[in-house]
Image 1 (cartoon, rainbow, N blue to C red):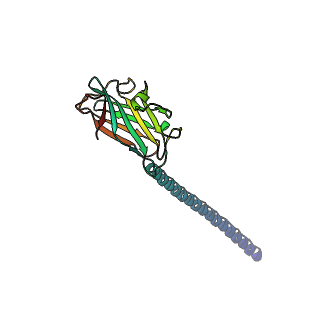
Image 2 (cartoon, helix red, strand yellow):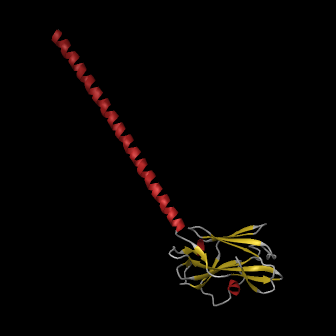
Image 3 (tube, one colour):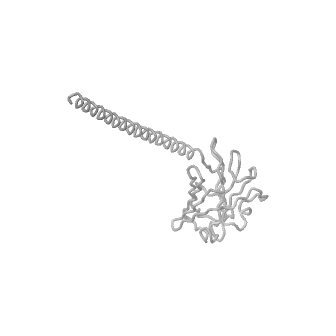
Length: 208
């Protein structure tokens, strides 16, 4: 009887030991799984940080510049059209003009233009004439026929302020206005000007 009881107790201890081992193994597995999840989250966060940094660098790598004098066309003692010469900044990535947004602001109004006409085949030397009846247009004078503003290319952004889709009227002397040109990537180019007091000439230079 004593021997049988001893064996039973020993068997129970063995079972308890196995159960403890199973629980321990379960804890180890759970801990390993948690560690794996934590590592994955760390890698994911690192990857997202790298992507954010890459996106920031990309944003900084596209830029427009004003390439010469900003011109204006006048009528009835008002500024009615604006032509801004554009080029790509040195060493920057090409800009897709078809996805570029333009916003015109005055002290009393703001208008945003999208889907702006792109003219790569103009034969008109005068950008205002090349604009035609459009509200606004990107006009390429030196380009390779696509919709990208690339290195060594020469474009004009021409806007008819008096067009009903823009301001609906010209600007009077001493009126300040801003043209913001926002490409799909990169910081926008902001051009600020004031209408000069003397609008006796049909075409004028708008000084910065």
